Image (cartoon, rainbow, N blue to C red; front, side, top):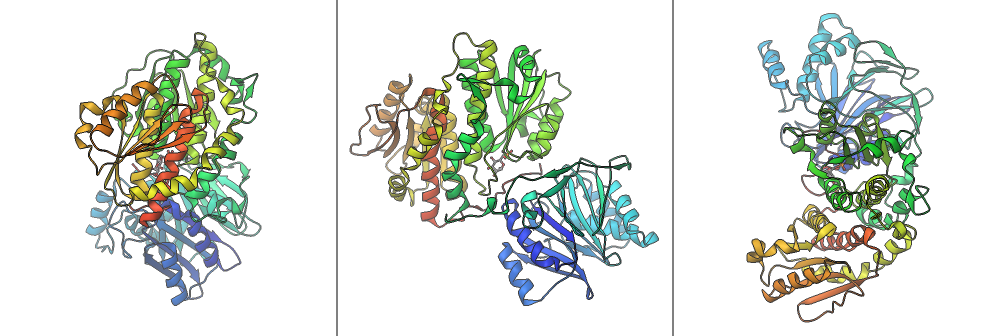
Length: 605
Ligand code: G6P
């Protein structure tokens, strides 16, 4: 949600900023801008729309410099417009900002009383005015930034420049991620390491409340109390081309096809004799899991759907009560926490504001432990959790989550097994499906061409229903979410048995119905539900186990999937739904990787 990149170097910073923005574009893409200092003074270029528009502006009006800051925006305060695009500049000061300043209205009112006029509707412009007004008092840029930041309430990651200080970039974080990229005789800042991989693989991750003075030859960090601190240097294992599209048309397509290898990578080395090695979560994990009497799982979006599958698994295999909730609800309500309850969070990015706030809120509620499933090793979530299961999905760029979801499911299945080892009653999950998961996923992805053809039937539809039962119900929800996110077709997921209690009224020839039908104990129930739908004239697309006895007929198209063990059904049946959404979106000509109004990482409330 909004991306920041900046740096101070002997090179021309502009190509580094633009490449960094391209790599951050998935975080927000309604406008972008950059500012540099050069012999011409403080220069700024901004544009509506994607980074390519900003590149056009920078070509038309040349800009260079050895120090600069840049930003790609996902609008929160004020509509997308050039005036609202960052950097915001007042006098000698320019600012880029991620996050939301909660006391911006009070600060703005005071600044207006002091005679200051505003050009934008953003909270960020307030920060630029504050820094400038402090700077005017003593011309001490660093002190002015400290005094201004001390007045802010809310979330921020900042990059600040001053025309009089061509070797100093100020950065600070509170509630929004920020890393410093270390070079030789040059340093950079970014909201995400991916932005800086072409220039460095060495990073320092700022902690909450940190403030840093970034210069060519040095980085000086102070903590929330103003004390000097050393933050450890980390080496990123990501290669710069890990975020390239390769031969694929879209990141989403690439990420769908990466699932065979990244799910296999996520479970590699995590089992022995068919059981999860609990201590891969950390040496204290076995004792913690043994004492668990119940589980609360909190997440948002697609990660919430992974949590919803886990609820079925944990109650079925581990016989522990499990409650699942979206983070934005959980954080603002009273929760009863029975003794021995484990708090779990699931987040691809580890930076989702609601999930982080839920974790911080939960800290005081008496949980017995805090376990996170996350895809980003240096994220806020992993740093603030006691135990972490790191998925190995690699960078996920497409806004609609695919490989992050299936790796989360694999992680949850293993954790379920860990809990079941202590609490299950002869009902350990069958993990054998994970042994050959790479080829099982590969086989289903081999259905791409068939699904691409079927997607043509959805192009002109306005609504679609997705049905599943048991742990496949959250997969129906996820299928519906994928379709609405990227094709803008209204879609809903339902437990098939609930149809008769309302949604059946919507079913007619214009409403395609997609169902997932593995060969499990609920198959016959599901078949009856689908008969009800067919009887109302709906066309059905059923992804069914080859041995489930479904056959294509008038109005029913059946796509057979190879038989798989029950524990991996949710993972396997997600794949055709991802492919279906992808191809429908491509045919409809939408912006698959960056769908309208959405952002990959929602770091504001
Ligand atoms: C955004 C993304 C979704 C994602 C959700 C949760 O809404 O567009 O794809 O599922 O955030 O993100 P997280 O990083 O916490 O899993």
